[in-house]
Image 1 (cartoon, rainbow, N blue to C red):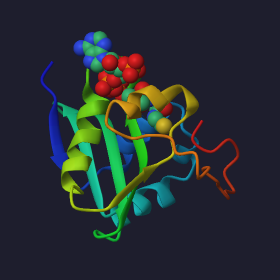
Image 2 (image 1 turned 135 degrees about the vertical axis):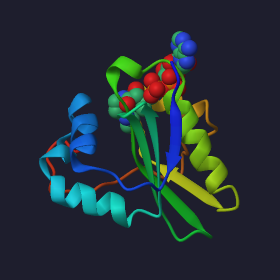
Image 3 (image 1 turned 90 degrees about the horizontal axis):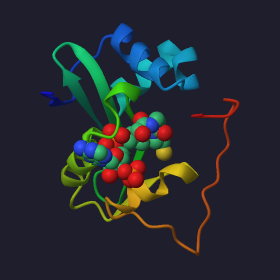
Image 4 (image 1 turned 30 degrees about the vertical axis):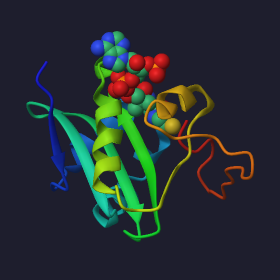
Amino acid sequence: MDIEYKKNIPLQKKDVISLFSSVEWRSQEYPGDLMSGLKNSDCVYTAWEDSLLVGLINALSDRHMVVYFHFVLVRPDYQHKGIGQKLVTLMLKEYKKVHTKILMAYNRKVRFYKKAGFKKVGYAKPMILTDMADAGE
Ligand SMILES: CC(C)(COP(=O)(O)OP(=O)(O)OC[C@H]1O[C@@H](n2cnc3c(N)ncnc32)[C@H](O)[C@@H]1OP(=O)(O)O)[C@@H](O)C(=O)NCCC(=O)NCCS
């Protein structure tokens, strides 16, 4: 399987919606906002097999103090092949000099992010205010 990784390329709505639908994420229900959000992201890496969008990660950042990784997803058929870890690694390289990297890990994905160096901290808890029911799930 030949996977190509691309940085900040223009994305088609149909490709993005197809990817987000594949993992049943509710963000797909807001296609306009989702596309604008990706366009306004500081950085987006995508993974492709030929013309099929198989994975994506985006970053929101001030490029100095903090970067937040929001979407991290890989098509189910393409999971467990190292694509997710590669996307995270590309972003960690991109933001190497930024002091703090943050993300919200689903409980079942904690081990995946630990492999990339992220850790849970005792002094803080993730908190969220959203109008999206069951955000992300
Ligand atoms: C989280 C997610 C992005 C990971 O993507 P992925 O491409 O499967 O990630 P990787 O293949 O790098 O790693 C996943 C697992 O496969 C294993 N793996 C990697 N390459 C492998 C290979 N060649 N053969 C077998 N297993 C492999 C990894 O060790 C890892 O194991 P772990 O789950 O025990 O840590 C993916 O599961 C996903 O999109 N899930 C739905 C959306 C989601 O939950 N996103 C995260 C929000 S916090």
